[in-house]
Amino acid sequence: MAMAAAAAAQSGDFVFPIFYNFPPMYTLQPVKESQQKQRLLWKDLILRYCKHHRIHVVFAAEADDFPLFHNKAINRRLSREVKVLLLDDLVRQGSAVWLDKGQRSALVMWRSIKEWADVIYAWARGCGFEDTVVTVEELQTGVFVAGTEMEGLHREVLVRAVKLLEQQGKAKLFKGEAGDDEGIKFFTAA
Image (tube, rainbow, N blue to C red):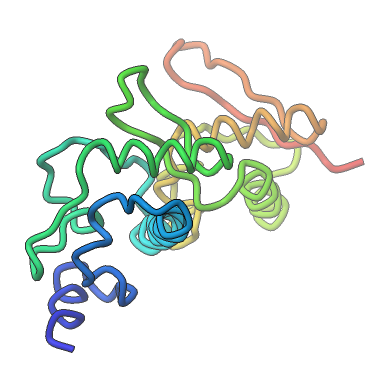
């Protein structure tokens, strides 16, 4: 119980699962069935942890002290190889995207792009922003998203979701006149 309390304390109010305090879980298991279960548990933990803390980018560096991959209470951490393997699993299932070819960081998506597109469009309709232009920045940090699940949404996730809305005829993404700003116009659903 002391280890669980220590793990919760190091990560705010997030409660880690029991396996987080089990040292063998930090080494890739050699038995295929055990490894599959291990990877499944870690993938679920990564998504839940990132969602809870609203983390969008996860790094695969060897020596980082990121609490998700480093349990100080039992002095264990995942190796870079295991982190890359887990993040690669998430990429294959559509829950992450590598941000670089060297696989140093991944964009973790605890919601699918379609789910984010639905959230964004529902937000736009709820705020009366149909046939109105808002900037990408306003959708990330503006007063209308403060306190919502969209606040602080990673730009890449936001742009991918808006591009999906564009394919559905519900929005249009365009460059502003300054060149570095992007606007989004939402349309009334047909």
